[in-house]
Length: 567
Ligand code: GLC
Image (cartoon, rainbow, N blue to C red; front, side, top):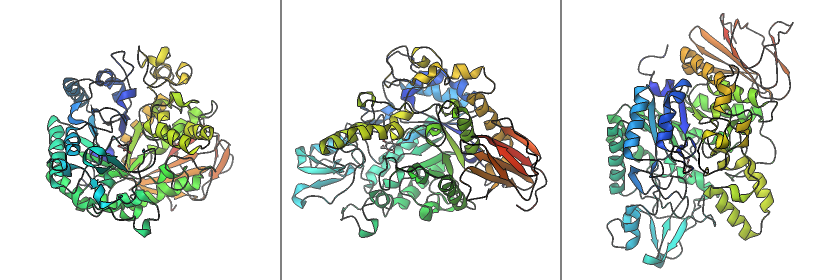
């Protein structure tokens, strides 16, 4: 049994991520709001999740939907007020749910008071809150930007005849973490939210905080790979350690860093319990699996293989086997829908593949994160026209390709699978107009499949629905510590159709069989007999051979193994 110091709620909890803009609108302006989340708390509780992560809800001009914050201590007016927030937090705590907020401190909005001051003159006391490069020093060395039309992270600003740095959009200037005053501001702000009772933070691009402010040429060893370079700033661990000492260590809270560029080799530096930095982080290995090399948002041409998928999970599980802890996710607001990406959302296989993915995440080691709508198997919307997109990432890339005279149709085809807006369409509550999300015009179109198979209302009544399967399996995870802490061992690691593994804690052992293919396959075990079926998303076909399993397309089955012989 894991000892008391190892066991904790951050490891045992299941996280449910809400993109507030798209969850539930109570005012009719087409934008989700905090009162909408309050209305749905009983529903959320009924899913068997424990921790809610809210994407940013702070004051923002919404260049990047809240990831450009203009006031860290106020609520975005479209979402409600601070008293709505207080009520929401109380409503969660009353139900035994915890809340983690988004902490976006690599950059602020250019409409934040700090930046307004900073850009006003070279002598302003806030000047060093951001990274400036005066033109007298010549052109700054190249830095790559995610959302810039020219991919250029330096923006010239006439007012003080200098460039400022923005790894994301021009409206998201990077804060200067090398300045102790900036760090102090951030820590004070974190105390402000912790004193209100929030239970933790998901930390936006936290690996990017530390920068070499001489801005040298990209060192050769990074060969054009800016993301890895950004993640290896010299002082990153000093800052996280300081943040832990100054703030995190004073509360019983949870932290999960978003960590692009962090690799297996430096993973433990962030989460080794003895180093006092973070509890866990999101790596990007899986999210890059179906993307072209070096192109975060372009799909690769051939299809990913199950062996590649499995290797990523196995490698990362091994890293945290003794120290630290992992996080598990298949989707979020930056990537397409899980079932469309890792499963098969065709009419025939959608249901089995959605439940297979639930089975997978809930039987792996690490804290599982689900994105709103996953529980009912929401799918990519695949917009045909650029007019339907709202995300700055798609819109700016389109602009830049248009300037280059590139093939825009091919880009739209790419976006049907890759675009972030696929995952941001409104929650599908029922079968009425706009899926019960709003009585107004939704800010982003609702997926028409709410009319048929995908809505909470239609799935509530069906005991075999994706939703009710999700509820059953969250409960199973909670009741079995082996599924949370147990050792993970892969069976048949080269199989391109079946992902099979065991989870073992002392005498408790589970066997998990997942057919990731659209064909019926057989899978044989040679050394042990599972005794009891715990859950399956398909009726099990009995084989007449001992130790042979016949698995239907996208079948997921979990067995208890009583007498464990050597595997
Ligand atoms: C993170 C967020 C993403 C945002 C970016 C800039 O990657 O998840 O949504 O656009 O940071 O803040």
